[in-house]
Length: 216
Image (cartoon, rainbow, N blue to C red):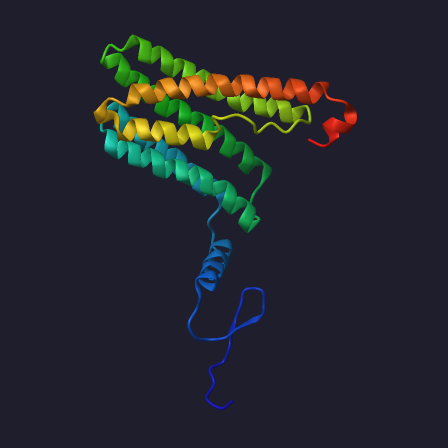
């Protein structure tokens, strides 16, 4: 028809008519632009790492609100890097290794800052709970890695990383209400439970008959 606007071209080569764009189309356009950009999953991982370093420094100085916000945003970045890697196809084996390694470092650094705060406040029991929480966090990741090396999928347990991030975020943001220590106690307790859940899961999977184990 004369006067009709020419269709736009989609990233996949198809035609997209001009006019109002729906939410789904906008998301598709944004996704295409991100994929075509120079942004890499590793850049997102490193940004999350830097934000967690900032969070640790702020918590050390007992700036809990700012530290909590930095921790939350940094943790969100840690979640986005994996999704962006899968969506964009830019992921690499080294990127996956880097992501997992930085996740462990970030959690340890932030909890170390929390332990320093407790030490300054002479809360010896809370410092010990932080140590237990760090060890439990490392063991949660280690049990999964060892299980997967044996061919057993091991994502069970109540204290996955997202759950731990939520608990610690609440504790940091509400530290002014004396909820930081209780959050660490919960973190340590749930971490220990999760380690045992994964140990039992792997034991059951490895002792299962071959036909049943193949279905895992």
